Length: 500
Ligand SMILES: Cc1cc2nc3c(=O)[nH]c(=O)nc-3n(C[C@H](O)[C@H](O)[C@H](O)COP(=O)(O)OP(=O)(O)OC[C@H]3O[C@@H](n4cnc5c(N)ncnc54)[C@H](O)[C@@H]3O)c2cc1C
Image 1 (cartoon, protein in one colour):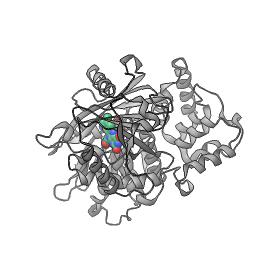
Image 2 (cartoon, rainbow, N blue to C red; image 1 turned 90 degrees about the vertical axis):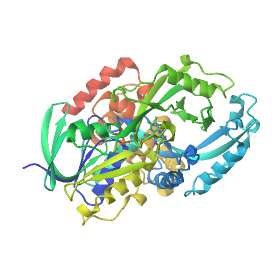
Image 3 (cartoon, rainbow, N blue to C red; image 1 turned 120 degrees about the horizontal axis):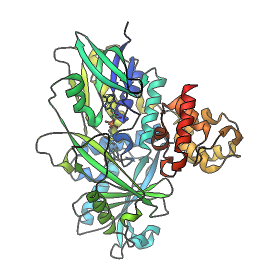
Image 4 (cartoon, rainbow, N blue to C red; image 1 turned 60 degrees about the vertical axis):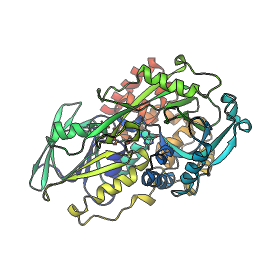
């Protein structure tokens, strides 16, 4: 007999994992399949901001901004280890926008949605703040306001863990191959990409949360004619040595009316993004192009006293947004809001498709996605995710500063940088890793950059990691500094752990 599910979700990005968590917690039997690794698509290539999106105010997308600002507040409480406040400084450039327009925008941004923890916006004198000296002398005033930062790939893992702990089956390295409708069920074939093995399962509903691959799911695996298509828009980031030693971010207005962010990144880098370019290439091999590098460098060099050169770039990454297409939309003005569409003809087994969205709105998107399926699951429990912490997020009073001070005391024999990294990655689950043992001997072999055996073992056994890239680029961000020569040693260690 084939295993039967209430919902099968395609895609282990932020939206798929959040929908799996919401559905499993409401009592549904859920399977999520991810063709490669969790967060290997767009959800690890974002700007990593939990934000309302200041620039969407100019497009009158007040609903989107309000919803995202409300989610910002909710997510800060759900995952205080993963999400933290970030102050932005915007130098004033009256040749692009009048300061009055910006003041009005920031006033709206402060008041449109909930804001308890974050500071409100201000006009500032750049000559009186530490960062002011970074900018050319003509930039004398600016504005500052608050948003939040997240580790996007880890937020995906937290949602997958949450789903799993509520009973969902999470299958990575498992591609959705095909499905056929048989009266009230879907008969589905999944393929394990390592063994090339097919398994057949059945499900009442399917959710297509394959992000940029959503169209491919329709055309190739379901052979369903889709009313709405997606437009693919590439955005790229460059990483350079830290521009500012403070932990503030910068938002720079560009001549094309877009903005460029300079974000503090991993304590030693600055992350600069992003571009907005129509994309039709290979979705598994998305790269920055020279003209995008020039666009980002020109954008920041309009402001910086010491210009950045392309030789300063240490790394880059690119991702693709899947935006719900409507006729004649200009790329930059296409809505970043999400669209949920049901295909169920006359009460047949439903197919729910997710188009667009932001990391910031994943929780509310998931809630609304499952609400769309209520008529198929009348016994379903109430919505629940707004007030429940994500795994490791149950930090008393959401106070990360006190939490980390306590950890430094409990694990006083360990290097504090390591404890800080674990605290951000795992939150209160740090104790599942270190088991309250104040003796660094338990860490085991160091594979490089303080990536110890104990963590590799944990990430494989508890967080679905299967390759060195999964560990170096998504479960951690150690890939930037991990010695190339140690890569095969790590791969071999992973293989040994998996085969035990
Ligand atoms: C440059 C850029 C910057 C951004 N910055 C921000 C930001 O700062 N803040 C914010 O809130 N949002 C931001 N976003 C938006 C956000 O990143 C995306 O909306 C979000 O990551 C989309 O998630 P997803 O789950 O829909 O898609 P994805 O993360 O792409 O997940 C889809 C998954 O489906 C899998 N898949 C594909 N085909 C199959 C198959 N046949 N079987 C099984 N699995 C399959 C893929 O492997 C992939 O993992 C940004 C986007 C871009 C491009």
